[in-house]
Amino acid sequence: MKSAFVYFTAGVTAFLFTFSASAQPSKPNILFIMADDHASEAIGAYDSWLKEYIWTPTIDQLAREGILFKNFCVSNSICSPSRACILTGQYSHKNGVLGLNGSINESSPWFSVELQKAGYQTAVFGKWHLKSRPKGFDQFKVY
Image 1 (cartoon, rainbow, N blue to C red):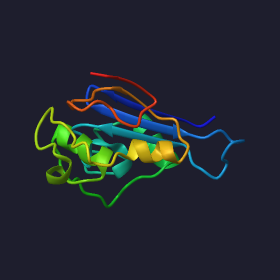
Image 2: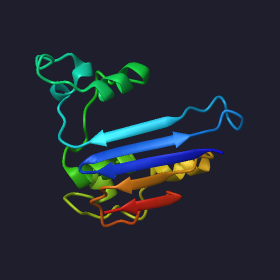
Image 3: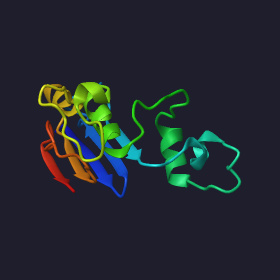
Image 4: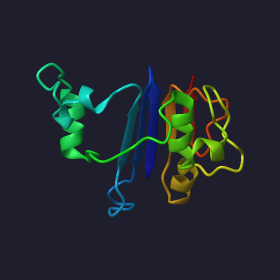
């Protein structure tokens, strides 16, 4: 069975999308964790000038065993607009979320819907900070 999980809490977002080995061995399991207010200097895997003072062994292990993004930017660094940008792949002026607790435009695409079309089961739990109801998630418990 294919399954997916997304987790938001205290500023943290985690997405997990899985396939069973027998169903789709070529499709990856996906875990996406978004934690608000973490500069790259605050994560050990980035080997920053703070490496002697910051210990993040679990995040570092995820970086070693998965993907560590070293060249990236954020389209919107504010909580709700950032989530909307990630969920839709659109800039804020397109998805309609310009500030905290905004609503995603009905016409905006959602990556969760596309993952469902690809056969993934999806879920999101935890911090949401959007007026829009989660779309494209088989299960959700958000606040």
